[in-house]
Amino acid sequence: MDAVVIIDLCGTFAFAISGVMAAVERKFDLFGTIILAFATALGGGTLRDVLIGSTPVGWMESDVHIYLIFSTIPMAFLFFKMLTKLKRTFFIFDTLGIGLFTVLGMEKAISLGLSPLVSVMMGVVTAVFGGIIRDVLSSRVPIIFEKEIYAFACLSGALTYLGFKTIHVNEEFNLFFSVAVVITIRLLAIKYKWSIPFNPLVSKRD
Image 1 (cartoon, rainbow, N blue to C red):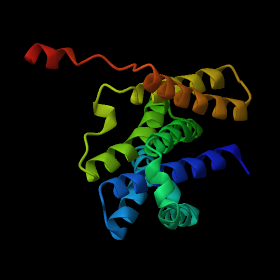
Image 2: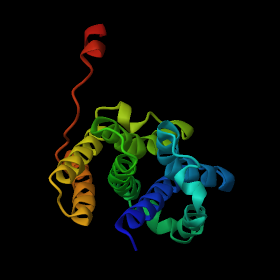
Image 3: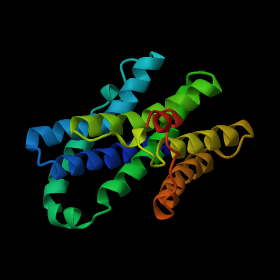
Image 4: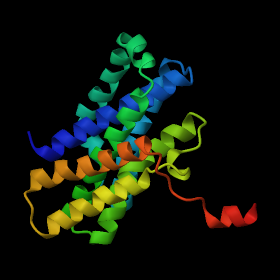
């Protein structure tokens, strides 16, 4: 199976699980859980494809993504107790999702001949907007709007992918290494409590 396809499916699965976990945390009903899983898993990629004019959007060209997302619902219910006991379950799947989707968004934009700058932006958009939709729908402040390292990790991974692609590093190595960069930065940021400084405008207002 092609590395890009593997990353796409793994990212979809990871974000769908994070959506399900958010729904469980907020005590959504079954329908609400399904909606949140779909919005989280497909939101970023859908926005990217609409922005770059790639229609129909990726997940509409095959039913695989739909079946994959639906499969996370019974899995979450079967392993409900185990998942709810793992305090970091949501964080783990969210981190995997942004790592995988950053590179996926970059690769799709580059394949369509978009500029490096726009490709980096599309990588970040693909990674973060599913989570933004998830957080808004579950009445939480989106992580990207807080001090926590989130979009910066995606940006670092996107720039790594672009740099390696420019010097013609092996494609599969580049894909998985760039995903690892995003995940590593996010994990280190949580472990060592790295954060983005307060907005100076906010501090000045206070």
